[in-house]
Length: 279
Image (cartoon, rainbow, N blue to C red; front, top):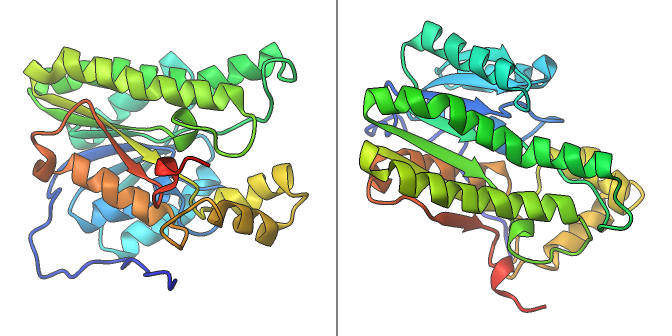
């Protein structure tokens, strides 16, 4: 099946869905060239009129993101932040308020996997996975929710993974557990803040072809053979092609926009049908 390529820049002759909104995107860089989830979301939001506050712990990873946002005619400010550290997140939120005066959207898009089950995995790796994948989301919500509550409105989109829903081909117990935790954290916060004008939802990406596949996962799982890994991942996807970060970004954009005004406490799974298969 032919892979239908999404447009990098939609037609300018239409209303912008996030016009003048301020969006914090955590994990807006990427481990390599191309369309990671965070970078694609930053560019997509800029296309739709948002002012982007792009956050990452690696300043170099934001260079291509900035270039692509500016090429789209968007506004972007970058900020270095360790999203596992409460003081660092607090400073990041204040920096966004100083720069733009408000926060309309928070995208918690930080995470990464580590191989192993309970026996093979060290306690140190487990703890690091919890901090990276779950505590980061908790802290983002902790420091942004009071701002949104004062505004009387806001949207939070958290990124989970299909590993939090089903077995995806390898033992990664901490990643699976923490990503399942992100889903339930989002539901609880959505229920708590629904009457305060704040919506909280989760996007659940599946096995996409992002820069992380080539720079990290291939080394971990197929000895550096990128094509072998892509073939394994593609075999699990019923729709016939592998998506990329732009597919994730489109789901995030929908949930961030007023088109999703009646949607909170739920998930959009972006996986080409993988989770509906029994094998």
